[in-house]
Length: 310
Length: 248
Image 1 (tube, helix red, strand yellow):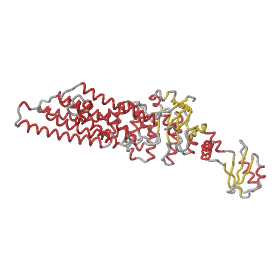
Image 2 (cartoon, chains in turn blue, yellow):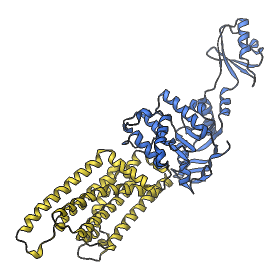
Image 3 (cartoon, each protein chain N blue to C red):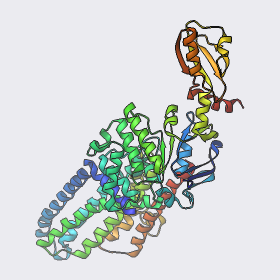
Image 4 (tube, one colour):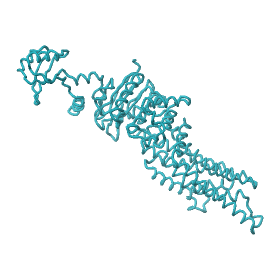
């Protein structure tokens, strides 16, 4: 599983003297799902356009499965499925017609078009919409058609620009499941604003801000930052802080304005059970215990803010 | 791959009633002219015309039908070509083509061939209509062929120009208007500069190169002019789309 599917080297894009994307480099291996995060206008879409050959980079190169996008655009593009920000849909066609065109243009051979269309429809939950005009579909279904056209030719790399925009919660769950499934055999790059989504489906995360990569790493690192070693407990008869500190593993106790206590503990220790037992035996009146999570939003803000401050 | 793009374009013309309506309306117009031509022919030719001044039925009717056709195409080609690229630009579907394994040349040629294929249906229908005269008279097939070829080349040139202007803007209507003005200008440019037969303007005029065909004369110089015209505007279109990719 170490085959590289996407290699981006020092991608830079200059718009009128301003660097919209500067020096973005990363690699992606087969079977990985990469989440692309960043505030509006950070350069996510620009990077994706460069990866798919819709925009020529000012500097740097893109290789898809070892094929250079600039030198051999046709071969490289055949390996990619791309869903842009606005799904590219020909509204005058029915779902079936459109997907057949997409399959044909992506080089699916004549006799396999039918099965390819069928499969893409099943994967995106469009089977009942086959004969409907795309124009008459709801936003969510249009989005699904957009995803279907991106995966119709079974590409090595699937690049989705905000795939879950405009979908209802059930559809979002389906699409997430689909992305996970795709991640098994293909590589997936997706950009999104919804942070929990990244946590659910991605193996790797990149945070881009003002055109620069500010974070590039495995999702676990991000999760660690998020979870920290903190517990939030609520006690109706709170004892003195010293009492709490006696519980194995507890390092610090802090009182919060809302009456709850934040307990820090040493890395690797899990004092929750001991705390509960202590609370029960000593009658502290425990009514709440929770891991204290910094939200992913906070981590995200920290990362992008650090950059602005620096 | 070119044909796959062409097929998509053709399909999209017929996906809405527009394609059918245009075919029907234009055919109705040509049919009316054809019918009038036949009627007039009997009136004029049975009358007091000296035998030396009589023309054949093919030429008599052909002239009016092909004259109308070249004039009607001046209006209908811009309306058909306007949406080719600007519509895709407006509805953000260009990335679909750009990220498919197609070169820009293939995209442009495909779109061009798609439109020309549709217009060929019209030209073919005119040709078939005139051939039906053969049931009662001897049709001058040479004259007919030269006219059909001329009309077809003219229409293809219109399409190439229309395609280029369509690639310049995201507003189909703007594309149609500019195309129409440009075509009109190119058609009548020789009218303004009559007299000087060797002037450059004459060489540029589309009508100037169409007229030999209309008279039944197939000249390689005219064919070359039309082919160069088409190649020039298709190349410009490819370059325009390439600029999209480079400049964003």
